[in-house]
Length: 308
Image 1 (cartoon, helix red, strand yellow):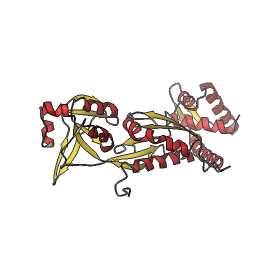
Image 2 (cartoon, rainbow, N blue to C red):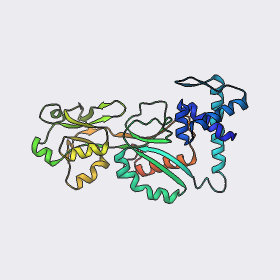
Image 3 (spheres, rainbow, N blue to C red):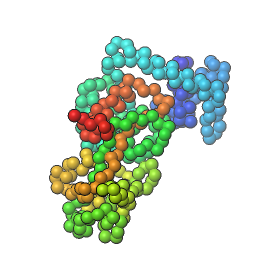
Image 4 (cartoon, rainbow, N blue to C red):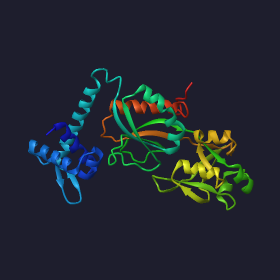
């Protein structure tokens, strides 16, 4: 029995709550994972997990052992990255998930610089706006906009995205240009709804001017749950959009969108990199988070830390 493999298998079963899911994330067979955990229990002469047909629960001894295993695995990772200059060249596979518009417009175009700096990192990037189960799907970190609802996650705020309101010229030619946000609550205008993964429904947008505050929900004929589809719907004239500035920049320059309510202010959207609280922040994850913060700082730095 390789004790490192056995400890890693045990830790992943605890984190995912399933031998099957643990095997999937480790790219091993369920039989191999089961055997490793059984061999570990036999060596320790302690039952680490209670198994039923539907669920796997960690025992009291298993929970205590799990905390020690996490520290041991972290120490082993640090030891490996400290040898032969590896600390200067992080290596290994990273699984991340980022919003589709951010990937398309900002992160993916900047990746050549990342790989030039860290050629030994393999990046598996999921591109979505869905809620990701970081532990169950073995994802190292996610980049997400908006306030985080899951307080159990560790998170670093890497940016604040300024928002604006926009519409396509074709839409305004048909519906007219609204002069006040309250007009969007009537039957004449419509918006494109964005379904937030955290709530499963469109959210109102708060707008302020000279002490007046309006929460705009609006009327929509289409709601989507993907940022690129949301922008495409607005460009097609299906309704009014609320967009981060980086998404609006190119359509504005091409005359495909027109800004609305220029004298109204909207709160910026915070941008976070989040990762599981029990996941060791390896050298490769640390440099990726730092790189994301560096790239975002050129577009939407955290309020109060504006780039010079």
